[in-house]
Length: 82
Image (cartoon, rainbow, N blue to C red; front, side):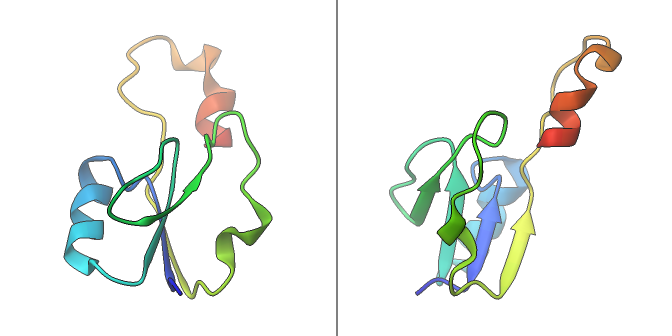
């Protein structure tokens, strides 16, 4: 069973962290990740599954909303939700 949960595991930092740890990892991602146990969930539009933290002792929350150069006051709720 996985004891580390990583959100944002496909991003710049998360991908490197997952590779460095390489075992006992569960990832929360919008798409199935072939190398890791994956809970498929889009943090912008879905509720995190109830079983996401089962057996987990460490969480690295690296998911975020980035690379948007528009006026952030119009999308502040997305930043806060993620």
